[in-house]
Amino acid sequence: MNRAKPHDIAAYKKWLKDERGAEISVKTENYYLSVTNKISADFRQSGFWLSLTNQLTQLNQEYYLNTKYYLFSREVPLPPEVHIKPFSSFLLKTFRKNVVDNEGWPAAPPGGWVLPAAWFTQINDIIRTYFVVKYLDGVSFFVDKLQAHCRCSNLTCDVAYEAKEEGYYAAHTYVTYPCEVPEENWDTRMIDVQIEIQVTTQLQEVIRRLLHKYYEQRRKTARSDSVKWQWDYTSEEFAANYLGHILHYVEGMIMDVRNRQEETSL
Image (cartoon, rainbow, N blue to C red; front, side):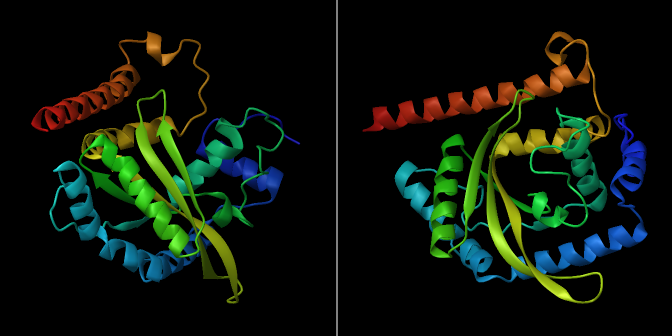
């Protein structure tokens, strides 16, 4: 076995083929697209999704009655788009799980190697969507409503409130959704797919959009920095990451001012 750690996507593809017997080809990508398109279409037409998006105006009004502010930027919110993770980004995530973030290399990462035979159930954000709320407390408000909706639909929902040292803040919810998908031999099978529903604020959404391409580029190589980014004040990473932290602090201050105004008006 080749114990050398692949340092980029090209080396990773070679490692997959030579060591794991998984060749990444045009056929692989086309099959990925057929499966993910089927999952996305089924989810968008599911009773769970249609019912949830039909409740947005009601949730907006409920939050307004509690706080005197709207939950969303529009009084009548529009349903968000449901996105399919591009194959290049998907393959990059398997690279991170198998190699970059695998502290036990050359052993398999926790949960086993992420390979084509099972990777649709191993990656939890192949299908994803974003709800953007105006204020910081709106994140937990909406997440609580989403969890209740999952229970009513008999679906499992896991929640992770992300707060990373890179300045990223958002709530990630993962709804386990059963779906029938095509096999490569034209048969079908049932699998449980995790649909990622992110809930974030307007300020964090702005920073996410600005920095998305930057983070994607940084993820394409295995890093071995001798100096932590927190000490390299000349780097783009220093400015980008601390901007995320500053915005989160500002959001907390906005909530504090809002709450003080509510107290004085009583």
